[in-house]
Length: 252
Ligand code: ADP
Image 1 (tube, rainbow, N blue to C red):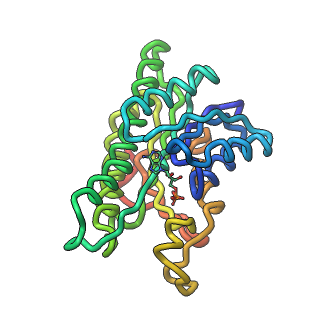
Image 2: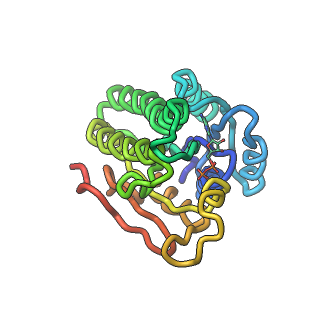
């Protein structure tokens, strides 16, 4: 990867941690974000143990200043920013007829505003660079949606709505930034994490068989890497051994 630089949000555990380790193993230098107090230092230590480089940038990903700080951390620490992996998320599960406004707002805010804020600052950087250089630059965004964006999820109307918004944001960003060289895709993983384990319990293997985050991470590495340049505005559904491209056609 020639020391390309990737940001991973929500990198303190689960899928974000697995993505960070996979990106580091592939040669990316990392900026790791999660909430203050999350296991960021531990993950940074794990990255260093596999021979990688990582700096941490703790903060609420939905705060404007966190988006600014993340981009600044990449530029100050490494002199560049090449890929943004938006993974931070939170659950407040409840049926729609019982959900509180606070449960709705938090999930929409962390997922949707969180994806927006980091995207806003990263794409502003790439656009500026592209104008300076007079041509397309290297920029990759991998957003984390869910099959819930299309299929819904009975106990998660807030989460399903946020994940649908993330697909729409992915498409709009792919279209809006294609001319600057930026590629933007979404993954819909069915990963086994503390979050999903709590929801799915010991579901029988098969139909809703969640998979290890270690199986999702290589797709993220691919989409962040030069090899993934052919894809933008795509939605990748990942579960079991299957990776399927879904949704509207590639943005041209
Ligand atoms: P998954 O692995 O499925 O993404 P996790 O709960 O394991 O689910 O990971 C989500 C991560 O996002 C957690 O590490 C959590 O601390 C982090 N996170 C939650 N809210 C925020 C936020 N506002 N800003 C940054 N990170 C957040």
